[in-house]
Amino acid sequence: ELTAPLLTTTQSERLDQEEAQYQREYSEFKRQQLELDDELKSVENQMRYAQMQLDKLKKTNVFNATFHIWHSGQFGTINNFRLGRLPSVPVEWNEINAAWGQTVLLLHALANKMGLKFQRYRLVP
Image (cartoon, rainbow, N blue to C red; front, side, top):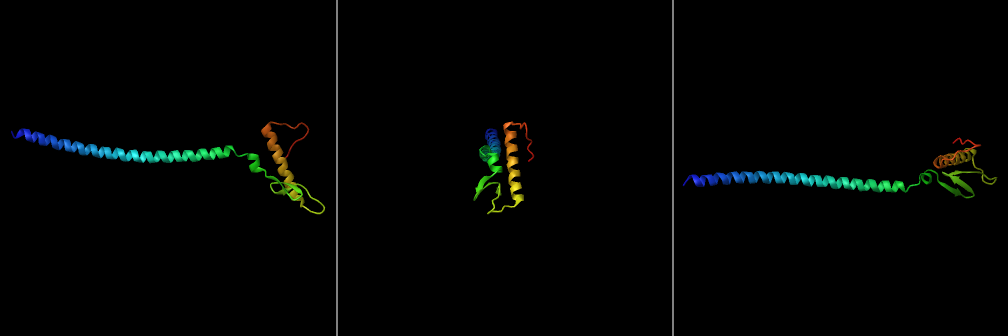
């Protein structure tokens, strides 16, 4: 009669130990899952940000970003350099030369982009 309850008590203790072990393992796996979920969300956010940046760059026109063509009063400008001068508005020659240098650089870049080859002229940007 005494051996039957002892077996049950021993089995009960063993089952309690197994249950405690399973609970510890479950808790550890749950912790790992939460960490991995956080890491996954972080990577997904980084991917979303990178995709937004890529989309933004795809819409950027490199020529518009590089060569700002506008005007200043009576003068056409490229990258804020005036393309000429008037008797009433003297412009330094170094500024005019810089403007035309930028113009040649733009023409050279556009010709390369379009695959154009000049027959009689050679651009020297």
